[in-house]
Length: 181
Image (cartoon, rainbow, N blue to C red; front, side, top):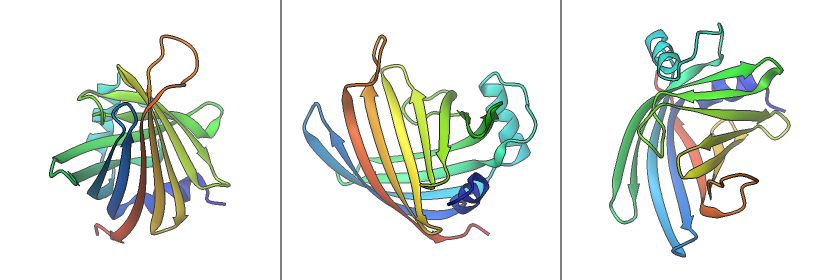
């Protein structure tokens, strides 16, 4: 069992990520390599996330939040780089679920509020993000402090009802390759 505070402590550092994406409508597969850097969130980053998402400061966030930077290269040579700040705010029901706020979204260049749920028995963080056209369900599971698995499923955003039409499924192996200190 891994407490949520332990989960967040294990997230910081330098990571190397190998992912495979399955684009279901096109029946296409793509692999990518990512260098990922995770640092604790500084006060100005926290303020930006809260302001950008029209949230008032509720006090202590879970894990204090993170500043992320990554660069990805796909097997076709396409390159994507991004930096963003994220903050996890608990709901009144406890620290295992709440809001996952970012000052910049992955799918769309805008601030975004998502939902998170944490399962300490599985050491798994599940994040659900409603974008304009898709709903992304993203999972991070720690196998040990330096190795985690990632699963990403993008569903076509329904007008109403459950998520039933996956458009993209991705799997990744993420290995810590060092600290940032």
